[in-house]
Amino acid sequence: MSFNLLKGKKGIIFGALDENSIAWKTAETVYAEGGTFVLTNAPVAMRMGQINELAKKTGAEIIPADATSEADLDALVSRSMEILGGKLDFVLHAIGMSVNVRKGRAYTDEKYDFTAKGWDVSALSFHKVMQSLYKADAMNEWGSIVALTYMAAQRTFPDYNDMADNKAYLESVARSFGYFFGKEKKVRVNTISQSPTPTTAGQGVKGFDAFISYADKMSPLGNASAQECAEYTVTLFSDFTKKVTMQNLFHDGGFSNTGVSQEIIEKFSGQE
Ligand SMILES: NC(=O)c1ccc[n+]([C@@H]2O[C@H](COP(=O)([O-])OP(=O)(O)OC[C@H]3O[C@@H](n4cnc5c(N)ncnc54)[C@H](O)[C@@H]3O)[C@@H](O)[C@H]2O)c1
Image 1 (cartoon, rainbow, N blue to C red):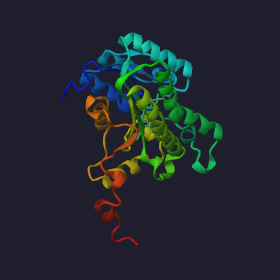
Image 2: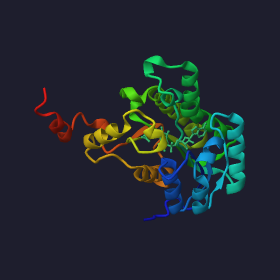
Image 3: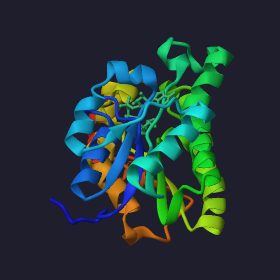
Image 4: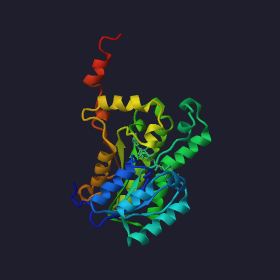
């Protein structure tokens, strides 16, 4: 299924690690819709991931960049404009990592240099990416920048740990930078708040398997898949959403507005 929604549009896609990654599905879908792009990921992830395979399939070049490094990001932005032959129309930030989660530290027992590192990678990196784009005047008018987030920014999910705080910061950066990008450059900035999704980052969260099936039973439309997230992202990159900006957009099958579902009630009925 292709509608050529992104014909002639150019961009950068961060965060494709393997075929389960939301960024991987997005790259495939953007390609199918006629967009061209540069793929980027942290140098260490390139060694572990299968990004070359994706690049080949989508005719993309790969530029390694650590999203916490301003120098890497500046080089990425200018090289991408050279490769793609001009300014950019879309950017996807699909980056997340908590050192506390990785090392099994509870929220009540954070090691703060782990916290700072996770915040830099997961949240501040979005500001750094946008500042790089802004200073280089790298975005075309009516361009679109999207980052991925999770509802733990609004409601408590204990095992999401310090990523909840990182996502709250990320969503705030989208609003704040969205103002300046809108006013000065006519570029929109949004976050998509996605259902739990079985990816490397997702599965790092404790109790993920139980949680993903709970979310599925709570959502009237069921969990949104990585492919569905890719498709939603494409609409935000397309010209059909030009005046949507500074929003946190829930893409979760209705989970965020559901108090309880019949399936969950049935699970507990007869229990004290
Ligand atoms: N999987 C879920 O349940 C879920 C739900 C909502 C939101 N999200 C968000 O979606 C985004 C994409 O994650 P995913 O689930 O596809 O998992 P993923 O593990 O496939 O992707 C995470 C990516 O972040 C990259 N990354 C880590 N450190 C980096 C750095 N320093 N510089 C550049 N890149 C770096 C990794 O290499 C990887 O490609 C993340 O922001 C995540 O928080 C995921």
